[in-house]
Each structure stands twice: as C-alpha cells, then as structure tokens.
Image (tube, rainbow, N blue to C red; front, side, top):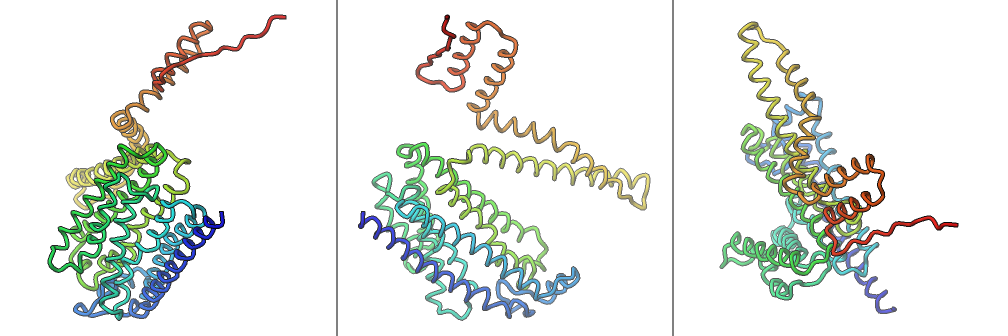
Length: 399
C-alpha cells in the first residue's frame, strides 16, 4: 500500500513540475508580448499576431482599440490554458493510479506548448524547435497508450521509436519531415483501430469515441480556419492583416479547445453521456446549418433579382422574407434531418425506438394479459436481441 501511495505521489509531483514549467512559458509568451500586440507593425516586420495600420483602422472604426485587442488576446489564451491545465489537474487528482488517465494529464500539459514557441521571439532557436516537436511526440505517444495506458495490441510498443521520430522529424535532416510524420501518424491510427476492434471493452470504446470526437471537431475547426485564408480578402490574410492575426493567435487556440474537453469527458465522465447521441446531434445541426444558410443566401439573391424588376431602387423585403422562411423551416427541417441521420447511421437504435413506440401504442389498447406477455417478449427480443427471454408475472395469492 505504501508503494502505491508513493507511486501516485511521484506521478502527481512530476505532473506538477511539468505544469509549472508550461505555465511559466505561457506567462513569458502572450503576456510578455502584450506591448508588441498593442503596437502597429510594418508589413515586412509583422509577427504572426501583430496588426498593421489597415487592420488597426478597421478595429478603430468599430470602437475597438489596440489595447482592447491585446487584452482580449491575452485573456482568451489565458482562459484556454486554464481549460487545458485545469482538466489535466482534475484528472491527475481524481485518477492518479490509472495509467491511461495519468498519460492523458501529461498530454494535456505538454501539447499546448506546441503553440508557445510563436510567442517567444527572443527564445533560443533550439527551444523554439523543441517545443513543437515535444507536443507532436507526446500526442503520438498518447494515442498509442489511450485509453488504459498500455500498449495494445502487443506490437504497438514497437511503434514508440516511430512516434518519437515523427515528433522529432525536424531534427532528422536525412529524411523528409512530412513523410516521417505521415508514416508515424498512420501507424498510430492503425494501432488504435486494431485496439478498438479486437481488444477494447465497451467502456474503453466509449472513451475512444469521446476522444476521437474532440480530435475530429478540432480538425474541422482547423480546416475552417485554413479555408478562411482562401475566402477572406488578401488584405486581411497578409502580414499585419486582421484575419491572419486572429487565426495565428486566438483562432488556433480556440480550434484546439475541443481536444482537452473531450479528453476530460473520456476520462472522467464518459459514462454519463451517450457519445453516439452527441455525434448524431452534431451531424444533424451541422447539416441543418449548412442547408439553412444555403437557402437563406439563395433566397436573398433570387428575391433581390425579382424585386429589382418592380422596384429598381431596391428594398429590404428579400432579407425579411428569407429570414422568415428560414425561421419557419427550422423546426420541420431539423426533425426530418435528424430522423434521416438516425435511420441511416444508427439503424439499430432507430428500429428499437420505433419498436418500443409501437408496443406502447398496442399496450394502451390491449387488455388480455397473455397477449401483452407475448407482445412484451417479442418487443424485447426485437429491440435488444438477447440470447434468452423469460417473463415472470406476479399473481396475487388467493386467500
């Protein structure tokens, strides 16, 4: 017992030292650059988070000063670092004897350091290269060990050198960095898929789904940020541009935030929420948003063309009519989309829900006990598909 307690304490102390080091780096990053954020840069000397004169003028036109912009940036980054580190601290306190949870806590502390390097321009080049490399290596190792902290299947342990090579690929000049990283990532994903399909228990599969949900959400957010550079005017995406500064500072941090949240849920609260239902709702609302946005834009364009035929001076009627149409379609369209998703992606649960609903309707009309018993066993077999069904009916003892 003494050994277990001392091992737990060692893990907590090691995590605390790493967390303190990361916190110091964060304080030395955005906070130390607040003066630079509040100053206007020249196009050729702008850092990734500084604003040029046109961007500063745009903010000023909306009543936002450079000081307010700097305070917003520092506060958002500070809040998100608290999310990463706070969830890691909660995990290490609640699950110190769980190897998978401990690995998750170390991952949540080390991975944010990947972005810290951009905020320390005066740091040695070795440190600025080492921080992103450490973040990628920790990510790959975490994926190998999640969710229980063991290498499974057994051959996954031989991927550790490859995972380290993927993280430290910048220090391997003889090999293409992108190729090494892609091979390492593909190998880690293959190991996790093999674990999920052949080894993981139902609880571990639920944890894996939660973690994967966060990674996919973060990937979609990163892709959206990247797509913005193709859509937003070049004046906003170039050096000193407003969108460029947002994407490279708070934008990246916000895009990565689903990872710590989903990891925390996967470790601490995965049994309270059904991830399949969360994914179903996410797909439903994503499709609903895309369809309503498309209908709104198409409606405005078509109605404006129609209105110009009768009133060349223009009118606000197209916007009002399109808005009312979208509001009217929201409820029916949401129900239809959600029903379609449940039918095609979650067929078993959809059929079970329909079976139970039909049984409820029959139960309200049926009075014969034998018929109700037959219906009940049939519904249980169809919805749950157990190996055997036995129904026990309690009867009142005759006096």
